[in-house]
Image 1 (spheres, rainbow, N blue to C red):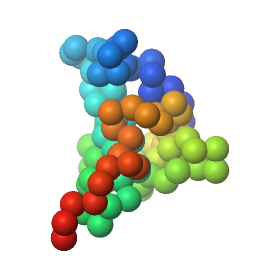
Image 2: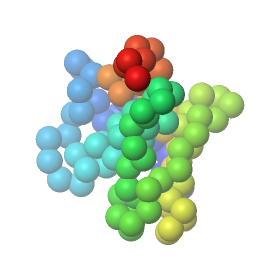
Image 3: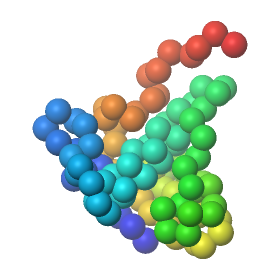
Image 4: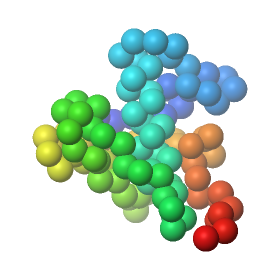
Length: 99
């Protein structure tokens, strides 16, 4: 299980810190999971593909402690993301677009 504190991937301004390489790819995956799991609008962000197998769209939910728990139904890779609240990818407060 991948246990992630989202703030470890962000710079002081709140943007993704790593510029390139595996750290950047992992940071991008995590923020995509946060956007997907926190978007409750009718046209929610699509689920990102698993960073490991690249095949399965991950399943993500908010846990009782408000962490985001995700899992790939294809390869079984799973993770938990904490400290995502208030980040640029926290879409809970986003206004609903007209349908």
